[in-house]
Image: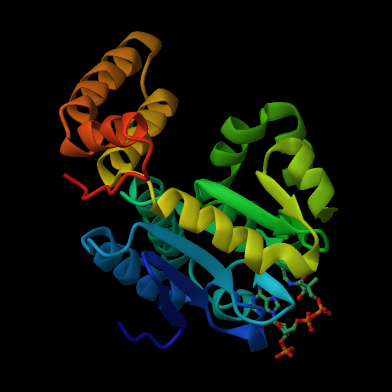
Length: 260
Ligand code: COA
């Protein structure tokens, strides 16, 4: 896979996707959205990828938001189309069969914070900075940004983050649940790698079904979500990987999950 705006690397069953526009603090332009969508689609059907790490190139930023230079002369219709493209990308990540781990250093602002929040596991370096600065530009986080943050951290603080546009440190993002793991700057790569390898070792069937259930619990009513969970649990229990996982426990050996 070759892209203008992404660098892709593999280490065992872990594929790392790096947004590679450090000169623009990895801002999300049309090409990045297009490349990420294609890349996640291809990885979704790649049996050798069992976990995905998403990061930004350089030391300064994960992603500093949507590309303002590209947006400045855009029509409202084009901006809505771009927002739609962004929402489809965040949906893709949420529905990606493999776990997606955001590895955040530097700025994660606007669409960058949103991109991180769309990931399943979010590891941040101590010096990372978060925020929704869109209000300073005369807009607001329109790519589903107001909705996702509400559900993730609750409406009260989410409202203040959107309305003030102020940046806040990784420690605060961790307290709020915007990031799930907080590490020293120098430990970011190692901790991201450790988590990616950990989840890449689990049953792809169980991971895929679990992600679908976690999505359903956000999107469906209580009873329908529970029934969805039950059906997914049945499919998972019927997998060869489930037999292997339990046999391996009893035999006191590591499991070898085939994804079947
Ligand atoms: N879109 C396009 N370009 C961006 C960008 C964005 N969202 N964020 C940063 N850049 C570019 C800058 O224009 C600059 O390019 P230049 O050297 O050609 O002028 C380069 O990245 C470095 O950014 P700079 O502003 O010089 O760095 P800084 O350390 O002074 O400030 C930030 C860093 C992140 C605080 C600042 O760049 C910023 O506020 N960016 C916009 C964040 C934002 O509003 N995001 C939401 C967009 S909807």
